Amino acid sequence: MIETLGIEIKEVSDQGVIAVMPVDSRTHQPFGILHGGASVALAETAASIGAYHFIDQETELCVGLEINANHIRSKRDGFVTARATPSHKGKSTMVWDIRITDEDDRLICISRCTMAVIQKKQ
Image (tube, rainbow, N blue to C red; front, side, top):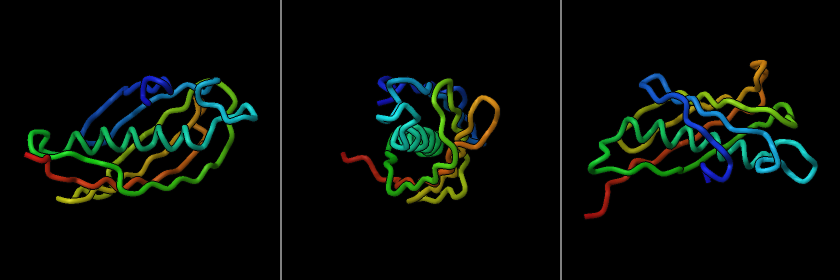
């Protein structure tokens, strides 16, 4: 999905993840504006990569458990940027806050994603 939507990961650190996605025909809904599902896919991608940064990658996996989103403003073209920051980093769950903005730093979407941390099967 990352490749299909044109998502690019710009930064991964202990402070969070920054990811960028184009707003074009790949991410439009039928009326020519940014699809809410594309925003949610961007948000969960950023949270997933952020959670993966913190787990023991040899023995654990992280998967989306729950996500919600409030779509604040529409967007027809250009790019949106997701900034995901960890709110809770537990042993079995992590909660991430994701703010998606446009090129002028206007808020497009607010999302919260809960990631489950699970053990890899032997």
